[in-house]
Length: 234
Image (cartoon, rainbow, N blue to C red):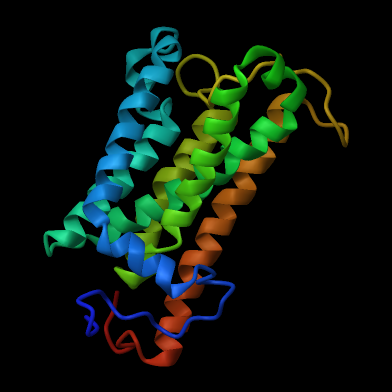
C-alpha cells in the first residue's frame, strides 16, 4: 500500500526488526534511483577488486567468488524492479540476505584480522571497505517497505546463500574453498581453538542465520498486524 507521500507505508514492526528511523527509510526510497546507481558503481568496483581471485579460480566456480558485488547488484536490481512496478519477492529476498550477510561479514573479517589488514591495506581503503559494507546492511533494512518476504522467496534466498556458504567453507566442489581471500593462512590458529578458516566460517554462518531470522520475523509480524493476508499461500 502506498502512503500520502507516494512511498509504501511503514508497517508497525518492532524496532528490532525495523531499526532505521522512518525518515531515513523514506529518504532511501525517495532517492531509489540514486541508490541503484551507487550500488551499480559498487558492483563494478567489486568485480575489479576480485580480478586476481577470478584469475585463480576455475571458471565454473566464478559465481561463488564476488559475494559483495553480487549482493550490491541484487539490491540494485531489486530496487529498480520495485520502482518500475514489478517488485520480485525472490529478488528482494536475495538482496536482503546478501546485503545483511556480506555487509556484516566484511567488517567482521576486517576486525578479526585488523593488524594484518592494516599492515597490508591503505588506511583509506580499509575505512572504505569497512563503512561501505555496513552501509549495505542499512539499505537492506529498508527492504521490508517494498516486500512481504513470502516464505517461498525466503526459501530461494536461503537455498542460494546456504549453497554459497557450503561452497565457500565446507565442500568447495571444484578447487579450494571460494571465500574471499584472507590475509593469513587458512590453518593459522586463532582463538577458542579455531583456525582462521573456522573463524570466518563461523561469522558467515551466524550472519546467514541472522538474515533468515530477520526475514521470517518481519513476515510473521506483518501477518500478526494484518499487513499481509494470512489466507494466501505464499
